[in-house]
Image (tube, rainbow, N blue to C red; front, side):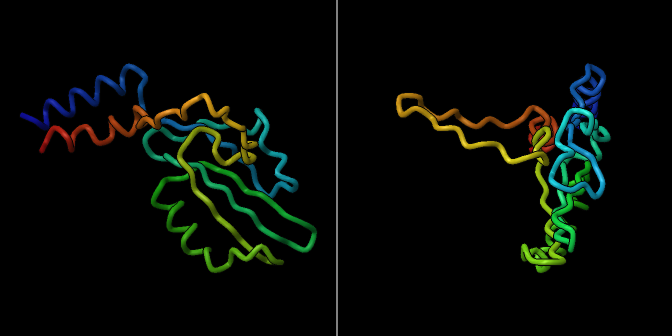
Length: 139
């Protein structure tokens, strides 16, 4: 019975457009990190590619970037497998994974927070709540 309730609830959210989808930048072997503009934004495969991946390669002619959508498993395996090659020196390869929209773009500039303003409380994204809802209902 719980299974039926969980699948019905999840099916409702998927049909109403609340599927788990992320947007990432996607490009191959680009120099100077210049593929972080709107024409390089892609919609990742719903409920499959749930992370953005960024590869930074140091070559003889400079730093090259690859950006793409990825599944969490594949991205985390790749990033940990290349960790020993992430030196910042010639022939270095660094792979990072993130799970927020367009997070594989350029680093955000740090903003100063006025001391009178309290920091925002972090909230779990709706997608994560939906992902773990069946587990919560089964307990």
